[in-house]
Amino acid sequence: MSSNFISHIIDQDLEQGRHEGRVQTRFPPEPNGFLHIGHAKSICINFGLAERYDGRCNLRFDDTNPEKESQEYIDAIKSDIEWLGFSWNGDVRYSSSYFEELYAFALQLIDSGKAFVCSLSPEQAREFRGTLTEPGRDSPDRERSAAENRDLFERMRAGEFPDGQYSLRLKIDMASPNINMRDPVIYRIRRVVHHQTGDAWSVYPMYDYAHCLSDAIEHVTHSLCTLEFEDHRPLYDWILENLDPESLRAACERAGNMGGASNYVLPKQTEFARLNLNYTIMSKRKLRELVEQGDVDGWDDPRMPTISGLRRRGYTPAAIRNFIDSVGVSRGASIVDVGMLEHAVREDLDHNAPRAMCVLRPLKVTLSNFPEGEQETLRLPRHPKQDMGERELPFGRELYIDRSDFEEVPPPKYKRLTPDKEVRLRGAYVIRCDEVIKNDAGEVVELICSYDENTLGKNPEGRKVKGVIHWVPAAAAVPAEVRVYDRLFHKENPDDKALESFRDSLNPQSLQVLTGCLVEPSLAEAVPESQYQFEREGYFCADQHDSKPGVPVFNRTVSLRDSWAKMNK
Ligand code: ATP
Ligand code: MG
Image 1: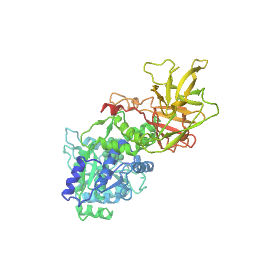
Image 2: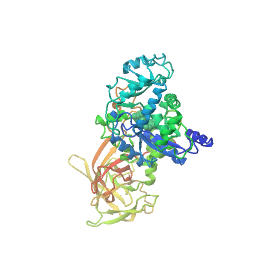
Image 3: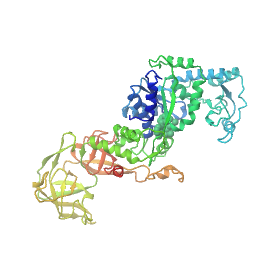
Image 4: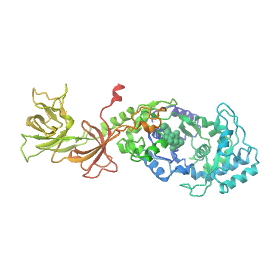
């Protein structure tokens, strides 16, 4: 993790001895969907800063909304973070495991006259809240006695009242210019089963209340979140400052979270700008809509901006981390070009992906002067620069090239195969096209060519053969399915307010399934998730779920063309 304004804040805190040298962060996802590339930024910041300062980062599920959450999401989030290469401090944590502590803090606020039970319905409460330009009005229940508040809150917990009949609110200031400070609700009645606590609770804390207290219980030093929480910071601080500091320290100790410190210091919230990408939607709610409407094949569809989708597409953890690092951390909101992410993927795969040949739309070539029944074995390096060893490729009388590498009537400057002209087969010989065979419909079905046996790996003196095309041997090639993915949205801003729905921005050509492709024999057993550069076609990976030994399925990760790198030269 490079230096940024947050690392500067941490440097200062460390210099001033604020936390006895400790750096404790946390990543707090709500388990109501899969993580997306935006979350990767928060993950890299929280785990990255902990790594940089030899500190710790907790994984805490912010699970205060049981109706929308599930174990499936918890499992997926854990596996995504591990895949990105980060490990959390100790056990996974849950806001729900602090429910008992949070309840005790609420009683403390009630007893000190800082919280009250309110009987306004949600609609009335909205009306009483006021607007940005008008102050709110006090709830008629605001002056209820502490004893009565305590009794009602205990009965709320016991499940005596239906959902929505009462709420617990802080007593702050209904005239505050910050609406978050207008006696915010901190508990509501929800008589639902929770994925972690079962039916133990009938009241659930609100995010703002649970979040700062969970940070305090975990003795977080730097509570990092996105800019939309800036207006919530006064509430974050108010709650912590209006509780007895000794009681906060005691809760932290009970949970075993002092982290070797002798002083208890309250967490401080710092906000940074969210990651926004063009051509991309980053909202769990909308991503869920795509899954539920069947626009994509699940949360890990290779077109999804989810971590698991990017993984299945063939993006690597290193590429994602490098991309996040290159975007940087600041407080200025901006929209990043998705081409920059694709560039990071190409850079990583260019270094690390072995080369191979795959013919997407096969066209048969017969070498008339190659002896029938004979075969040579060619050895090609797996990578042009890295030492990855060699692969073997049989070469015989029949082979396949890509349909798009032959033109009967070539356009100007065409460097591939045309009648009576020569081209080099990658890693093999120069061939000349002597005859074009067509079917009754006039389509080219086969080329009769001749090869020059003196051209293996070199151009003989005076011979200029510029074009190089890829190929596979007919006898040994392995049939494969190839899924060519393109961007899921074809609009730069899929969320354009002029559209009725963001789903109107979906790219109808985002998936093209090519069957009957042919790959070189070394790819028959491609391990799921292994990446390749298919020469001249792009970067591909064997599908995580569907690729099987002998029956490979490949996903196109990204094309070879890198317009972003060119634009920024
Ligand atoms: P979404 O709006 O996509 O549903 P969220 O903010 O509700 O996301 P959480 O599970 O609450 O999702 O997010 C966990 C953490 O990830 C939070 O700290 C949040 O600020 C951060 N985060 C979410 N989206 C982004 C983003 N686009 N860029 C950076 N951080 C993000
Ligand atoms: Mg959220």
